[in-house]
Length: 239
Image (cartoon, rainbow, N blue to C red; front, side, top):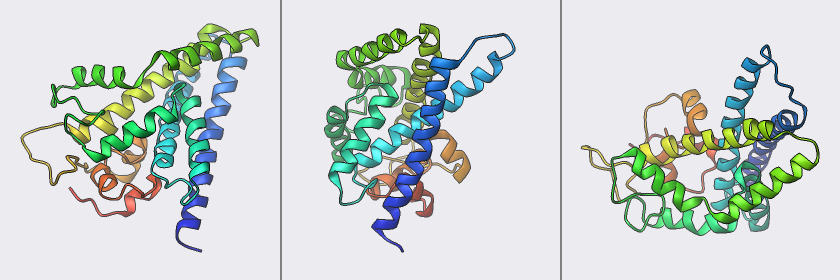
């Protein structure tokens, strides 16, 4: 069977794999991990993998915002998107939803919440602007409550930081660099159209590793925002 139904099933299976792997590292790292010199290299690998999986959670939520996770089922998209963003970093789906659609309505302009019109070529000022626009006191409160609950259940603070906070921050950097800054930054080459977005020439594997295809196929995403993340490599690069 092809079409929206099969796309939805594929998205669910992939999201379950991403979420299941993320949850296994999250629970195992926070509640079961014991630090030794011999296990430190393994922990570093797990933290890097967890950062990538955290990026994946955000990308699944992003598909939910476009209705491509469960086509025609807005409630499912809302529930899954809410859970993914909460698990990733205590983010609010309800707050991010209108901001992301504002980004698509006026990409790369002063009306784009993801764009820094005052520094369209500079990564650091843009990152600070991006961070301040999305991270709120409510998010910090939710993370703090969760961390306190974890510690009451026996988790150590260092494990919470290592296996939740650090991967979330690394994922933030990954999402910003590959999913926002590089696709939308201004340079001497003009954008192809009013989407003010560009793709790159990374291979499908490198595209998956860097940002679940939202760097290498970012222009395509703006042209066809209802395309789920895993289908983007099947689209012809539009520049």
